[in-house]
Amino acid sequence: MTPKTDRSDKITIIHLAVDYNTPYRPRTTMAVEWLVDELSGFDNVVIAMLRSAKAGSSPRWIECAVPAGAGAARLFHFAYFGLPWGIGLHRAMRKTAQRIITLLEREGICPRLVHAHKFTFEGLAGWYVARHFNVPLFVSLRGEVETKVFRAKPLLRPFLRRVAHDAARLYFVSAWFEPLFHGYVPGAAAKERRLPNIVRNITSRIAVRTPDKGLVTVLNLDTRKRKGLSYLLDAMTIAVREQPELTLDIIGGGSATSVRQSAAMIEQRGLGDSVRLIGSLTNADLLERLPRYRGLALPSLNETFGMVYVESLFAGVPVLYTARTAVDRYLDGLGVAVVTPPRNSPAIAVGLLELWRHSERFRENIIRAAPALFATFDPAAIMARYRDDVRLAIGEANTTASEE
Figure 1 (cartoon, rainbow, N blue to C red):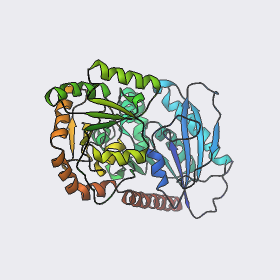
Figure 2 (figure 1 turned 120 degrees about the horizontal axis):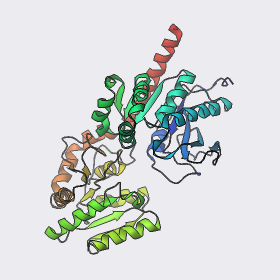
Figure 3 (figure 1 turned 180 degrees about the horizontal axis):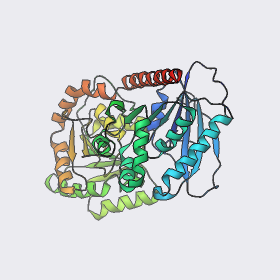
Figure 4 (figure 1 turned 45 degrees about the vertical axis):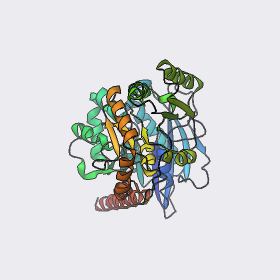
C-alpha cells in the first residue's frame, strides 16, 4: 500500500522508543517524552514499543490519546514479540520493522525522518523503516543497554556498524559511552552529537541556599541493585563512624516488597538513626525539596544518564556519581561533583564525607559553573541544534534523491 500524501507543511518525524509511557504499560522514564514535548513545529509520531515474550499475547497496536500540550501528534502503543536477554534480537527487530511499516502505511503516515531512541534495539528496526521509506535516520545512543549488546553479541557488530554508517546523525545521550563506542565503531565522528536528556529546572543563573538537611539519594527502589543502593548503605556505615551526624534521605517509591527489603537493608547495617526512607515524590515536589540538601549521592553501577544529577546541580546541590556512567564527561573540570569507582564502598564513603564537609565550596563552584552548565543543558539550545540537524538531513536527502 502506498502512503497517502502528507498535505501538512510540517515535517513528520517517526520516533521509535521502547521507553515511552502509554496507558498500557508500567511507568518508565520521561526522558524521550520530554524530548518530544520540546519538538514543536514538527509532526511527531511516536511508536511506543513494548516487548512481549509471548507471541500473539498482546494487541498489535493501539492508538492512544495524546495529552494536551504533549509533543506527540500521534502516539501508538506497539507490542512486539521478543525473547529475553536479546535472544534473536536482529530477527525480532527486523520483523518489528515490517509491522511498523505496515502500521504507517495503513495510517497514511509519510515519514520524512526516523529517530530511533536507542541504538542496539530501536536502531535496528529504525534502519529498516528508514530504508523502506528512503528517509534519513537519527539514532540515540544510551550507554547502559548499548554496552551490554556490543559486548554480548559480537556477531551483531557488523550490522551495528552498518546502522551507524547509514545514520544521518548519532546522538550520544550517554557521553561516557563515546570512547567505548569508538572502539567498536570507528570513523563516525563527523555525524556524532551529544543530546543530553531534557531537564525541566534549567536556568542561566543557579540560586543556592544554605542546606538544612544532610545527603539525599533519589531512585526507584525496584532498581536498587542497579543504582548501587547496597554499596551506598555500606559506605554510610563507614562514613557515620567518622561523622556520626551524617544523614541520608532516600527518595523514591517502589513495590511493597522493594520498600520492605530496602528498610531491612538499612536496619541490618544499624543505620536506622542515619538513613530514612522518604517515599515517592512528584517531580515538582522533588525540585522544591532538593536545595535543602548538602549533596546528592547516587553511585549507580550502570546509568544511561540520570536526569536527577542535572536537576540537583540546577537546584544548587553538588552530586556524587560513579566513573564511566551517568553524567560522566559532561561535568569535566567544573568542580561540582565527586566521582567514585563503582562497587567500592570505602571510596564512596570518602566521597560522602567530602560532600558533607565541603558543601559550601561545592556550591560556590556551582555558581561559577552556571554558564557552562546552562550552555550544556539548556533545552532551547539543544532543540535549536536538533532542528538544524533535521532540516539539514532532509535537505541532503532531497538533494541526493533529485540527483538520482
